Image 1: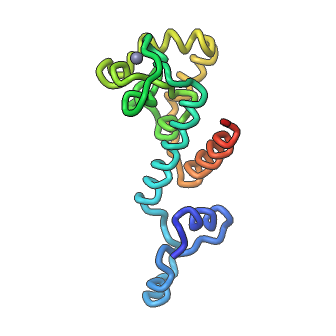
Image 2 (image 1 turned 90 degrees about the vertical axis):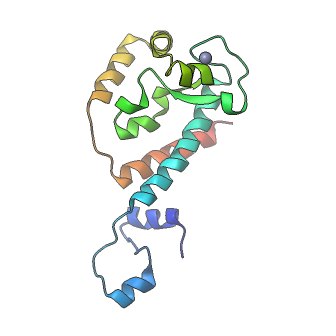
Length: 163
Ligand SMILES: [Zn+2]
């Protein structure tokens, strides 16, 4: 059985193959396979790992929102800033523009330490860019599997440059 990702490539190339080819022949199901929630979940998992690597490369091992430095292991976290994950549209939950290195205290105990995060992000990217992000996150645009795959490909390419 081909790997999940190669099936995605097939879908993207316009030649989708059923998840279980033999079953399809026996069952005679002519409908195109739908991408299961599990598959999207797999892409998200991989995408999250890629996001983390890029964010740690770009922002290092010091907490973005406090003075904690040289974060290691489970205390080096990838936090959503300046808005919590729960209020972001799905694709923006996996968007390196809204992710920063954080310590466990800021990310979990202080629920992101977002006031400080907002302040530092304005210093980093400027108010105009922040306002653009704010407007963007208020638009809830449903993401298709193609959107997820495009994001994954885009970030994988970006990660290759992170050396
Ligand atoms: Zn911190």
